[in-house]
Length: 636
Image (tube, rainbow, N blue to C red; front, side, top):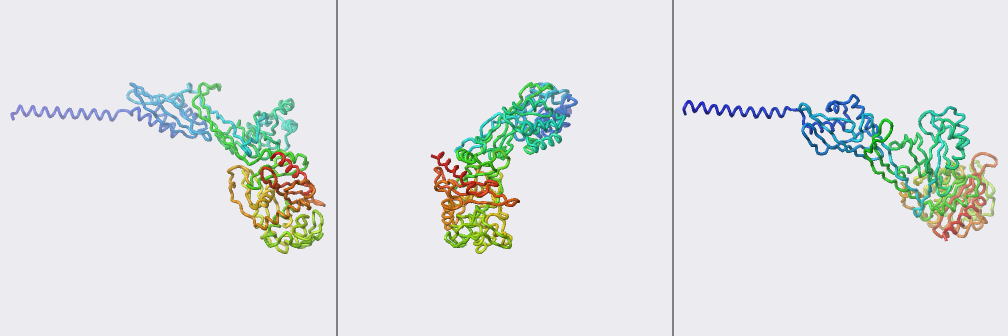
């Protein structure tokens, strides 16, 4: 190779080497340029989800001074604590880029709302940044002063249903009269006006105390019909501090159902705190009874409308909407016809009283009446009373299980001293020769003599438990469990024998006892379908107990303490006269429990108590007789 050839080859190598350096230089220059629009967009969305306003601001071209506050307010205005942001396909056109974004914002108690927006980017001097404006949050936000507004949209409230899916409520226009603390100028004037409206002193005191604690909140005091409000308006409307909310109230189809169905009204401050989002001060919620117990189920889940609103409160655009989910009905076992018959029979009772009727074959509550209606406490389910001689059904169960029969000998002395305590007969002294006659005449001393001879303290607690007395009913509403403590001494055992001492029961307890005697199967009471205790397996009573009690309860109606009270054929019963309180003589509650197996639709077991009503047969017998007669007529 000549010298010239060597020089030419070397030149070619230098050119090649130079080209390699040039290419490497180009690659290095490309890697060291500013972030891509895709990278900036992804970083911005990641920071947005993390609510890292400072990091977001650093990715924005010419961010406003209140950038962080505007972004934070967007979530706060919706009551949201977090959100996620999902990008679409980014497109680049010269020095600008656009990326569609779907915002997913969970709203407590409502659901996840979606907002579709666009993330815009711009490149200046090779650097990509977000071209931010309020429209980045939502396209409908046109000015920095615009903001988002959330309006929950509730579905129609679901119904409370009775047997055959019959509605237990109707709709009526009502007005809740309340107070607002910041508007009150004179407590005394407000109190006088509210008393005129029919509010109780206790309700007024509670509302005024709440108004002082939360001066801007509505504190309800009393609810009246729209017609009644129009009558009261001239005297209460002008009073500073009184405020009013009109709403459609669901009222029970019969007055006596108010204790079960309950009421609906404007939410109180305490309820609002308990319910939380999405409830607001404008919400109408269940206040009592099943309406309150099943508030969330009946109300359903609201939808929402999100709007863009200007500084004057005017809507400038709808941002998004979320569908509402209707509530589901609460199904009960109440039979409206049986309830109506029970209320009609009780309409002539002018003392506090309660009547419960159950389907003996199922334990389902068919009717529950407390009088007077609207008194605020459900005596039928939650009342606690000494049962008096109606408890002798349980005492007789224990005696029959210990080998006695209705023909077992018994005597009825006028009085009996047990453990230093003297016991008398409440419903008279009869000629008693056996247990059947002692039961029919309700002789206290006969039962005490037999029980102190044959039974122990454990027999009473065991028998009570057999009949589910002491087990809280799972109805879907509060209900008294009943209480039969183990007798502490011989005198306490004697008192327990006749349903006195420390024994307490509800009318529901005793209706279930009567149902068990009717069918021979102890079944738990049920009211609301699928309540916690629904479906508890029945337990059988011994055959000799069922046979013996049927004979004895039939005799009560035929010739005993419930005779000549109008009870129809097919009725088996036990009366009771229960002393309580103080005085000489002591006041007495009147009891009547039993069942009728000739009602057209099904066997119906019942229990009735009249507070301070005297003897059970003469007081309760005619009422129950009318009830059973109405049942026969309506069932035909």
